[in-house]
Every structure is written in structure tokens, then in C-alpha cells.
Amino acid sequence: MEIITGVPEGWPGDEAAALAVQGELRGRVVLDEPGPVPGAGLVTGVDVAYDDERDLVVAAAVVLDAATLEVVEEATAVGRVAFPYVPGLLAFREIPTVLAALERLDSGPGTVVCDGYGLAHPRRFGLASHLGVLTGLPVIGVAKNPFTFRYDQPGPRRGDSSPLLADDGAEVGRALRTQDATKPVFVSVGHRVSLEGACAHTLRLARRYRLPESTRHADSLCRRALKEAQAAAA
Image (tube, rainbow, N blue to C red):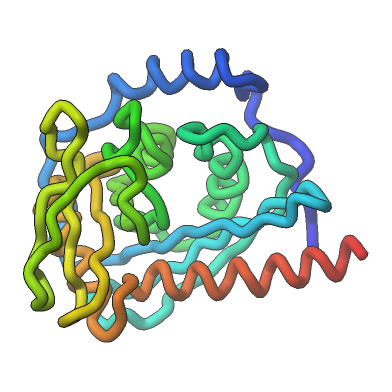
């Protein structure tokens, strides 16, 4: 499996430089578009997996038909970790390889769903926002945990939700119940999608399980690709 050895030109190499890039790009996030119609067109799940001992990161992109949830196309990319581990700056470790996986798709990705955060980030610029600004695509974040934000438990039924709140009281996302009596997921806007739209997309993608099918497929694919990369590197 080919390993991508380079990172984008000018990619930050330390925390100070990454924070400066975050601050500059954050102003480009588009928050006033409703986004694509949920259940129409294509939707692409992206996810990453690491082998820190070998300094490898694998990204997977899986395109689904938004109406049927059938897999249309999938792609992977393997790269070297592009940035040290710093909480709040994880996008800088992942995005070069995620972009490489997206570029290998023949179909347009449509709406992109990240296993992570968008506005639900200490500086309001998580992976979903960062990826959206760099690609221009509509992107949403669907995370398994609420990070540093507070929320009340939503009602017990599928579709129930409650605000995900920052310390200043701003709503940065929603705790969304995707299945009856299961733990919620945490949805936030990335780029060019409204919060209502992001929640509607998430519910359509999570017809049977807690996590969206886009995330489930991308997680499975990147785990398989990581095992292949590890075997090739052994």
C-alpha cells in the first residue's frame, strides 16, 4: 500500500503555527446555508486510524447513496502523521491523509460526515469545519462524546435532542438520540450546513444503529486498511 510521505506546502509544524492557522481559517466557516436536502444525493463518511509506533495514519472515505444507504464508492489513503498530538489540534494530524482519500474518489462526495466535531470545539473550529473550509464541501461532525461541553439528557425516543452548550451559553451542537433508549451522539455544524440540517442528515443515516452508516462504513474500512498498512510495513 502506497504511503504518502509529504504534507501540504506550508502545513504548520508546531502548536503556535497551528493556532494561527485555526484563527485565520475560522473566519471562513459558512454558517448561513441550509445545506443539501437530507436523504438526497450522496453522503460520504470519513474516518481515520493510527499506528503511533510506526508513525502511520490511515484515512477512509466511503460514499453512500443518501436515499438507500448503499455503498457507491470507497477510497483509502495512508500517510505519515503530520503533526504532534495536541488536544484541540487533532485536525492537523489527520487532514492531509483525509484529503488524499477524498481525492481518490471518482464520484463527488456530496455531504461529508466526520467522526468528530465542527463548531463543538474550544475554538469553534474542529475537524469538520477545517475540512469544510479547505474543500468547500458541506460537512457535519457527529461525535461519540461531548468533548468539553455540557448538555441535558435528551428525551428517550429517537429524534429527541438537547442543546450542547459552551461555557458562555452558546449552542455549539446538539445531543441527538438516534435510537430509542441509547446514548446520544453529538452533532455539530462543520461548514455550509445548518444545525437542523445536520441533525436531519444524522437521523437519516442512523436508521438501525446509534452511529450513522457513513461513520460505521468508514470506521470499518480504515481499520482494515490500517491492518494492511501494518502488514506491509512489518
